[in-house]
Amino acid sequence: DEAQSRSQFEAYYTKFFQSGKGAGTAPGIRNFQLSDEPGELNPDPKAAAPAFRKWLESRGLKPDFFGKSKWDEVDLLLTRPPGEQQNRLYFWSRRYKSYLTPKMFSLAAEAVRKCAPNPNVQSFVALSGHALYMPSRMSLDMFQLAQYPGLVPGISDWMTSGSWNWDSHQAVAFSVAPFNAGARRYGAEFGQTPKSFPMMHCVSPSLFRAHTQLANQCKFISYYTYGPDYESTEGFWSHTWQGFNVQHINNQAAQVDDILGPGTMRPSRVAMLYT
Image (cartoon, rainbow, N blue to C red; front, side, top):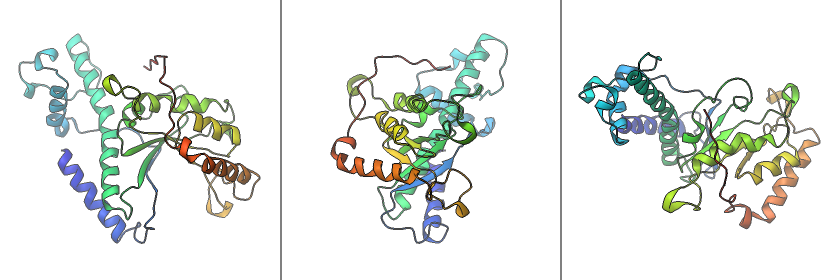
């Protein structure tokens, strides 16, 4: 229930910022992390069924598409079954499951803006940066996560540091491509400002990688993590030469912020198929 979820998030973040861990947050807070490396929600099929049916109907589907005569007979199916019509139901059930988690984060971001000291605070979700490279899958639907203007879709960048040093710096372009594709506007709105801009952790900061992130439409770069070493678990750079890279990029960005801020990549002429 979307209305109930909104109410629950607002109650949670009201308490969070007034008397919880967020109490005393600076009035100028700019960024707020909702979650780090999350996975998909696993909805209760029975409890989620009414909302699932409404969601299917809003997409122009009818019960007979699933071999049923009325909506009450259509239930959420998250276990792959035999049969064409059951496969259809399984496909749309998985799509609904993929839709739920990004939608949840978008509602949480709305509540943060409403309850935080700064109503313009940007909330972000940072996914694991390994899922697109290793023999696995996206932790959740990246295309869907990028379709909410009030939510910043983010992803980690560990592939070029420490024991993860096994890929090129340019690989960051591939990591954020699903976000840029999901945020792109189509039809009459084609070419207009995207629905969202991606965020990326720049672990073990380098000039080349930060420039690559900016060139691929990342408007938010997180230099994970400042440190010092006794306050951080890994990736800290406060006492290393990498601090120069952070300050240099920040200085350069400040000099061209009137261009860098509203700037967008040119419309892609390449179709990307992800299965």
